[in-house]
Image (cartoon, rainbow over all chains, first blue to last red; front, side, top):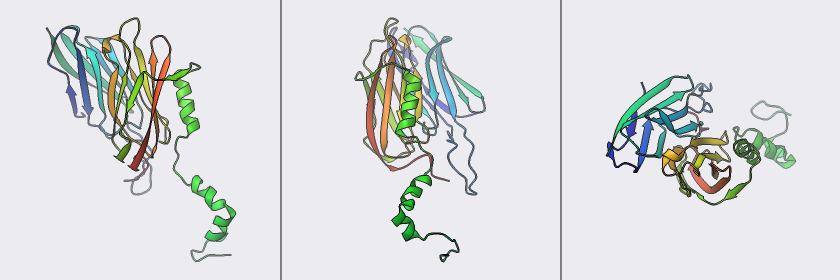
Length: 106
Length: 156
């Protein structure tokens, strides 16, 4: 299980725009590098990242090998209601990882 | 004719004089995107629509010491309402092995059209960001970046 840091403000006023930051531990191997024996290292990247707010997608990113290792993604979302932000990302082996973060809206 | 390393064929000086040396420099370079592949990738994203400059701001340091992690921030001047909002922001580069960097999909619930991430740059080059609005218009901004330590193509 990859390590990931997800930063969502715990509390927000209704209608506030809050910044969400995600940092995922992942090598983002480009597929263009070679190991010490000269053999190419197979590509292994996170290809998609989705954030949903109480089940509705609010942000999505398609990533390519040009995204740096340990991808960092920051974006905004309107704090509309109490609930849960769900983050899920898919790598080249089609493995999906999911994290959640609660948000309290006053 | 044989040189000291046992290879036959023209020596280095002859190669340079003939111009073949210059040509082989390009042959042995690692695969990289070109203006042409970048334009093709942009065409895939925008289709036949016209891309205008403005409204989008691409923030990249002009001088990058380490191309392995270059901070990139994009903001688009746009209301984010259901009627009019930024639908997507795509980032393209000129000289990495692939022209695409990332595509971000936003919507009215984003509130503000601003994203940031960290990217790799294999060479000094131009990076372009294009925003797609909900009305189908496209806006772009480009930044020239000088990279001293390249990413992507080096070995371990």
